[in-house]
Image 1 (tube, helix red, strand yellow):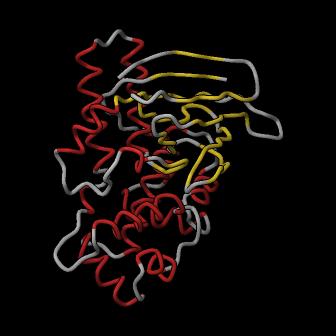
Image 2: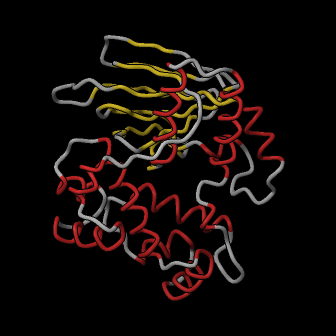
Length: 277
């Protein structure tokens, strides 16, 4: 794992990884436009707090300020050794991917990796050594290959490929109004069979799983972002402030505003690369 700091004053920043590195990009201040290849074509989206971009070796991404005011942003870059990822992949025959390149995604919500990135940055600034970086690299490799261990398939459930497809779709679209029909189509099943097999695979209904994703997102944004509570709720897929507050209190045990005041934010070990614009 390598660490490097970089900055620039222009409106666009281009970043390309050499063949021995896998990249993780996540904002730690503000939001930015990000452009890169996904599913064979070029896509453009906005990357915000708690969201990550995973970049396969030899792939290029472009970051730019968000219009219309082109506000400043700051991101953390984690460069992870492809060799470590491949070793981890070789030891896990149940991993949902067969090659490192399949981990690439332009935008996904992953507050765990986003929190790790901030911890990595702090560790770098405080002089963490090579042993720390190596341990963090192995941890990240394991996590990227098995991001949600509680969703491992069980008897009678979805196949690993179906489960990966559906949970990835949920993570990428949790802020939208996701329907059971949409999820069933992603898995290639009828509504009835999808609901039964998803519950068998995860021990949760699709709504329970999706609600957990949305609350995880809300907790992260409440801790690191200054947007009004009602706006945080909308960004996380809750239709209105009242519904957000009711669900949040039921599952977390306090109101969203109280959670923000308490400043809960988890952190994890790692190592990182920073860039700001």
